[in-house]
Length: 280
Image (cartoon, rainbow, N blue to C red; front, side, top):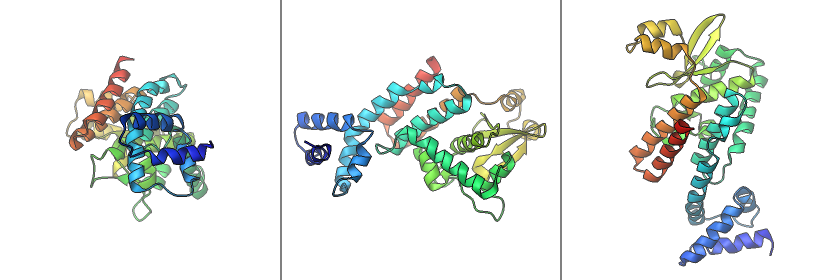
């Protein structure tokens, strides 16, 4: 039996009443999960809305197990940027659904960096921020999703790349990962309540609010004049956010987002990932 005939047969069993049959179908779909989107595209017909839903339901527990099994593998990569990209890729692929693989994030980021280079050549951090987040009167490629701030997809870099919308930390991660492809040293700042990027330009430290059109602020001014300014605040600004701290904050954002939605299963997996990170 060819793979495509077998797949078509499996689709006919998606709504079978037998738990044994559904378990067997789940096992078969899981075994071909990496190639499943391609195989489905090559069938003679697209999936119906109901079939899409049933495939997602069968693969959701498989994907949760995969995420927990592979989580923390980013810790063994050589650089902080590589670690951040892999960690965000795992989280983002899970949020994006069963058709998306974490390996797809790197090429998407490469494509954006190439678009930026083709448009403006090699850029410094401020020029890249202007290209991504838009100067006054310029196109805004990425911006803060203020209308639906707590939506889980705001932490999904695949979704951010597709829609141009995101939360502060996802947009900062995107700025950092695109900048890394330009050889730029862009770091994170674990600022309370509103994650920022941090860059050094001509010996001066700047904080970048990627959620609000890539606004550059002198770190000294923020440390002295922010309403929450205190000695601890200055230390937060002066020390770049580690990969661990950045990913932990992403997971905590998702914990809150799923709590607001009442999605306890997904909330619990985010908590388990956070616990693994803190214990490792």
